[in-house]
Every structure is written in structure tokens, then in C-alpha cells.
Length: 176
Image 1: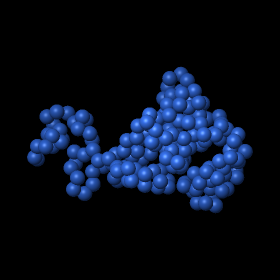
Image 2 (image 1 turned 90 degrees about the vertical axis):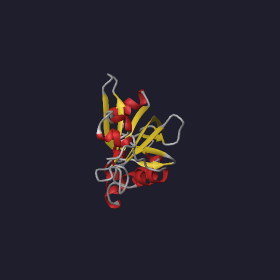
Image 3 (image 1 turned 120 degrees about the vertical axis):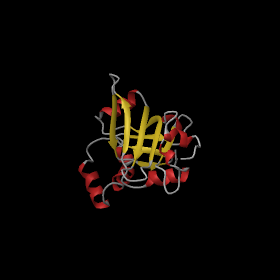
Image 4 (image 1 turned 180 degrees about the horizontal axis):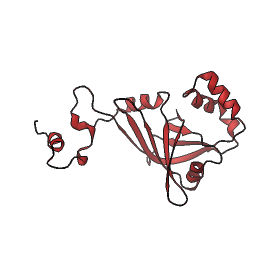
């Protein structure tokens, strides 16, 4: 299964437009997955839930989090992270990190529209959370489709192919 190199992962995460999907667990044990804007800051994925968002309450109660950033077009790159969300700024401290919020918004909409968005929501408190990409407890994985002359069996890890099938045999080194 082709993985992105460290440099490819970093470049992919910096590309504008990719949404972050934040997976948490509600108080009743049900999973919740929320798409949100993000930015990379100091080797962390940083995002800004609103003060009354359920996923913020979830992360304040239980900081374990699953993150996914992916793309819709080939080669379908993706980076996933299992880690712990850290509260960098509590809701109401927005003025202390507003420039970072502008930078986040500018990754998704033109600068003028980003500033208008920030100004139109300036009275809506947000928290700033970060998930380390380098912490010992963080697990960062990446994947993409095979490209060019790479083996088509690279589409999945070997464990997914049923023994004795064509793809399993190819993955095990058999010739077609």
C-alpha cells in the first residue's frame, strides 16, 4: 500500500481546500464525525470549534480524537491521525489568536471573503484546539492509490486480500 513520504504528507496537509474530519465520541457513546477547516501550526493540526459545538464538549470531556484529511481526486491521498486534542485557547480568548483564525479562513476562501467571514462571526466565541503530528501518543498514517508503474496490489494492505484470490497471489509475488 503506497504511503506518502514525510515530505509528501507535509505538503499535502499544507495544500489549501482539504477539509479536516474530526471524529469524537458523544457522552452517550455514539460516534460523531464533523468536517471543519484547519491549518498546520507548529507541527499540529489546529482547528476552531464554536463554543456550543457538541464535538468541542466531547473533546473537553475526552480528548481522544481521530482525524482524517483526504482528497476527492486521484491518487486519493489521505492522512489519518489518532491522538489527543489539546485546548490551546478556551472560548472567549479569540482575540489572542484571531490572526491564526484569519489564516485558517484564508485557506478556504479568498482573503477578502475570509476577512468578511471573520468580521461577521467575531462575536461568536470559539476554542482553538490542536492535535500534535509528532507526539509520542499520536499515530499518523497516510495512503494513496498506486500510480504509474506501481503494483496494483498496492491499493490495499495485504491483510485485506483473501488468501487464494488473484490479488492475494499477486501481492504474494505470483506472476499473472
